[in-house]
Image (cartoon, rainbow, N blue to C red; front, side, top):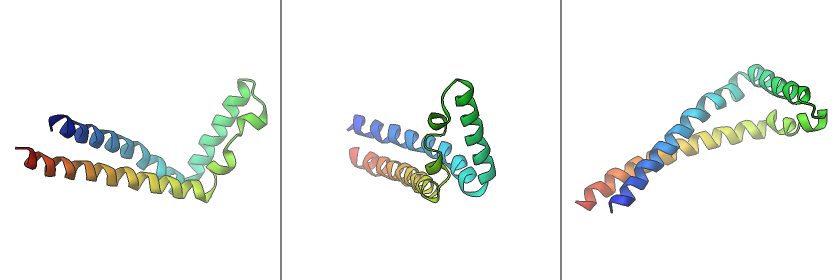
Length: 99
């Protein structure tokens, strides 16, 4: 049972770190779109400076600027938060059952 409890702890920390990384990025994508567009422009300029064509450098840009991308980022952010909460609750529930 101890290995299952450690799996809950590891899952909690992985989901928490993912949430901490996704939350500011989601905020930038949804509320500060000008910063997100500048980041995409910088990435495209960097790729073109490395010698890639415009088509390759701007691959996925349309999706990165779309509303679907913003909504998917919000969904993933809340999914990681809910998974972290689930792992924490499961850990405390099964810790009391194991003893």
